[in-house]
Image (cartoon, rainbow, N blue to C red; front, top):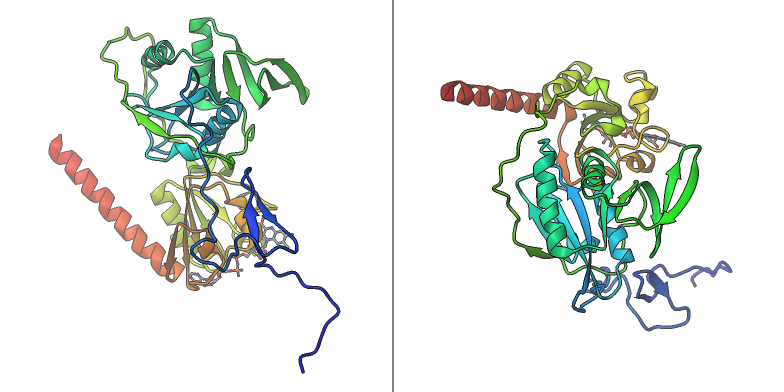
Amino acid sequence: MQPTSATRRINPRRPYVISANGLKRIILGSDQGTRDLQLTRHTAVAKTFRTTQTATRNLLVLLHSDNGMLDAHGKEVIAAAALLADLQTAVVVAVLGGTGEDLGAFGADVVITLSQLDAMQFRPELSLALVAKLIAEYQPQHLFLADRNADGDLGRRLAARCKYSIATDVVEVGGDYALRLVPGGKYARCALPQIVLLARHAADVNLPFIGQGRSVMTHECTEVFPSVVTDLGLETSNPDSISLEEADFIVSAGNGMNDMEAFNALATLLGASVGASRVAVDDGRFSRDKQVGATGKTVQSSVYLALGISGAVQHLQGIKECRHVIAVNLDASAPIAKRANLMVVEDAQALMRALMSQVQQAKQEKMTTQTSYA
Ligand SMILES: Cc1cc2nc3c(=O)[nH]c(=O)nc-3n(C[C@H](O)[C@H](O)[C@H](O)COP(=O)(O)OP(=O)(O)OC[C@H]3O[C@@H](n4cnc5c(N)ncnc54)[C@H](O)[C@@H]3O)c2cc1C
């Protein structure tokens, strides 16, 4: 006979339904709903459109993409606009530089690509001219931008050029107000201005609905503008001189990486910043400021190359906002495999040597091609 226990146990696969706001709801005592084990149905229920009505008003979101991608901050700005929009309002998102991502998932109803512009070039007059065309076409009630770098610059220029009202460092928006962070760590409430520059985390991207995500024709501008500024191009900074939180490419070492010479050479060759797991820091191979994770830095790089890192929960907390995680580990079942976009089951030392040789070869070929064109 099976031993019995007085301890009540919860069936983790008990039926549930997905509520309108996208949350999983368990109905106690009911056998109606979905079970995780029903493999064809255990994935989240498809979200419905925020609205299918014809739009009579528009909110315009302006964002620069980076290598064809939008970061978490940009997606939060779209979500903030979508949360404010009513059933007759469309969320129009113009991406300067363009993106291949599905922005409907973040609440965009219309997606416009401004391919002439990207964050790599500083062309303020062209940006203002193209945005002016969009404003004339869509007559938006409000414009939303991320309060950082090129987006923040564009928002401020627009406010000055068009004499629009503007709020910066906005941490919260409602139907008719914006809450701004002001010096002294205080919040100031103001009427929702024409231009809203949002700080990070102003909205949650996990919306209970989706936008229609329709792509419309790319807008081009053939006008030539008098050059009031000279773009001297991008300056490559030494990866060691920037903080890990700002680094776009990080090569990170864990307990399974033991060839420091090859590791440093690889980071230099790739122009990447250096990160490390806590074990690699604790054993003295890296300084404490290189530690990534819950008790170290939270990073947001486009690429995070993890060499010999198991992917403990504390480490994963520090890399949850990275765009592409590439993990190299001898153990295919290491926890980092669940987070990695690409898992390479290989000895970290062997992979570093092979990667360096490939990169050197590619650089050599590029130089040869450039010389032959010169
Ligand atoms: C309160 C608290 C806070 C913490 N904060 C952090 C934190 O901020 N950051 C952090 O990183 N950790 C943190 N930790 C520690 C964390 O729990 C793990 O112990 C740590 O992240 C493990 O580091 P690791 O993956 O480098 O080492 P290990 O767990 O030893 O894993 C090494 C990995 O390398 C692989 N490997 C071995 N040899 C090779 C090889 N030749 N080639 C390729 N792969 C190989 C192994 O398969 C293994 O997966 C914290 C722990 C606690 C309790």
